[in-house]
Length: 310
Image (cartoon, rainbow, N blue to C red; front, side):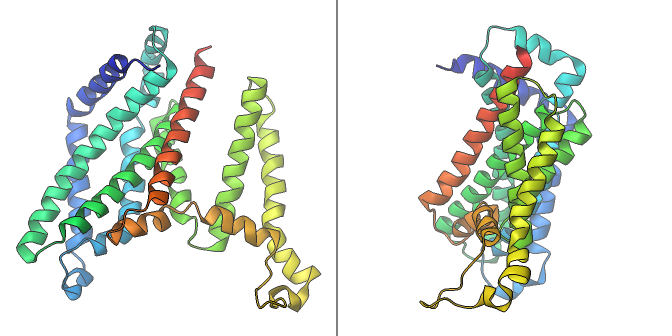
C-alpha cells in the first residue's frame, strides 16, 4: 500500500518549487495569455455568435502538447543533473510514492493554470453571452484529462535524460504522436511503429536488466514493424492490383494488414477521444482512455525508477 503521507510530502515539495520561483508564474501567465488569444482573437469566434469554447477546442491539444512538457522537463532531469535524486531514492519510500508525488505536483500546477484560465474565459464569455455551464464543465474536464495524460508522458520523458532540453523535446514528440494518431493513415501507422518498438525495448530491458544491444533490437523491431505497416501499399500495388480496393461480395471493402495496423493505432488519437467532451458529452470509454493511459505511463515510470535504484 502506498503511504499517502509520503506522496503528500513530495507533492508539497514540488509545488513549493514551482510556486517559489518566477518560472512557475511565467508558465501560468503564458498559458492563460495563449489560451485566451487562441479563443477570442480569431474571426470564427465572433462569426459563430455562440458563447462557447469551440474555437479553442481544435487547438487546445497543441497548446497542451507544448506547455505540459515545459512543465515536466525539470521534474526528474534537473534532479538527476544536480544529484538530488540519489538522496530521494535512498529514503525509505516506495518508487510508486515518489512517482505519484511528483506527478501530483505537476498536475497541481496544470490544474491551477486551467482554473485561472477558465475564470478568465468565463468572464469574457459571460460578458458576450450566456455560456452553457454543462458544456463548459465537460470541455474543461476534457482539457484537464488531456493535460493529465500529457503530464504522464512528460514525466516519463524527464526520467530518461538529465538534459532538460532533451526531456522537453522527448515530451513534445511523445504528445505529438497521440495528437497525430488518427489524423492521417501514415501518421497512425508511424505512431504504431514507434509505440510497438518502445514496447519491445521495455520488454528487452525488463527481461535482461540491461540496455546492452537495445539499439540493435530497436532497429530490428522498427524495420519489421515498418514492413508490416507498408504491406498496405505492397498488397495494393504488387499482389492484388486493382482488386485491392474492390468491394467483396457483401459490399464491404477488403483491407490489408497494413490498413488494420493503421486503424488500430489511429484509435489512440487524443483529438478523437476529446471531441465528445467539447460537445458536452462525457463518455465512459473516453474517460477510461485517458485514465488508463495515465495509469499505464505512471506504472512504467515507477518500473524505470525501480530499475535505476537497484
